[in-house]
Length: 405
Image 1: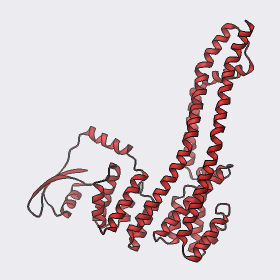
Image 2 (image 1 turned 90 degrees about the vertical axis):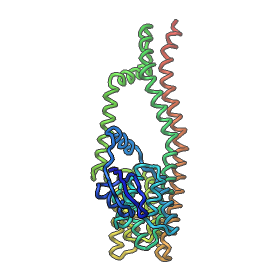
Image 3 (image 1 turned 90 degrees about the horizontal axis):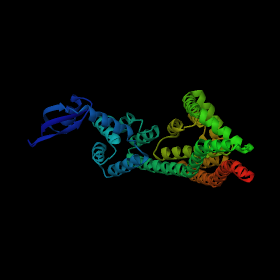
């Protein structure tokens, strides 16, 4: 809610302005905490159409990785400069352009000002600040080294952001080829082939087998295309619903690792996430058990989630992390467990895990590049064969009619 106020400062000067708060009492408390003597305060009346417009803007205004990177970086710098958390958040909030993030940071600043720990205030907005982010902040608060935790978080989000950009970027060209392929085939089947059929029927020409097959496919798509699209849409909707169930997600998560090529590639991606998360959290001062708890919560695959949970249980019972991970060589290869053993012996676990991250990230990028190099020409050849076959099916009966004349 937005409130308009009129108040006086300690110097007796009158001040007018607006303030955001959950209630009139909350707004009054905020102004009093700023040392103002409030003379009047009223809720600002906003036209309904403007309210709807603002809500729509916030709905579409997504908080990106870049927003979080900049927020973490700037907050860390300000805290290192001995600026208090509340003051730093207030200053940053004047510079944030994303309205959704601005609103959340303002709420966080208010709660910290009321006496809540910074990490607890962030937890109110767990749709933006992940369990991983909050865990690192909690550690920084406990150790008294919050700026360093923010530095680690900034680097972590930056690395993950770049990693995701490479994965998405690598898929753009193959997806473009598939889109063009689908558009060309659909155009030929829906518009070119029907006209061809009319012309051939008028000439009373004999249909070659390949042409008849294409005509049958064209007729099927024209007659049943809408139902086919509906069936595909329902199939996608049903698949998403199944993935939202515990058993369904677990089934497909297990199935993922059995798919040739994709399975091994996915393992490398999840090993990168595991090592990256553990390295960042341990560097921030989080103990192994807490780091495993946070990592378990952020692992997107139920297979790895269960394995990390089992490792956490073993470590709580006094077992080394490496010993527990060794029990699952299919998902945690010897390279990973051997390097973790070195980290446990030398006490430099975060550095060892950084090496694991670097190794598997390189492996993922190399594998991805290899797949793309194979997929691109394969898709182009497939596109050429299908379009070429359609063109032949169109030209063949016309050629036969021409030869007959």
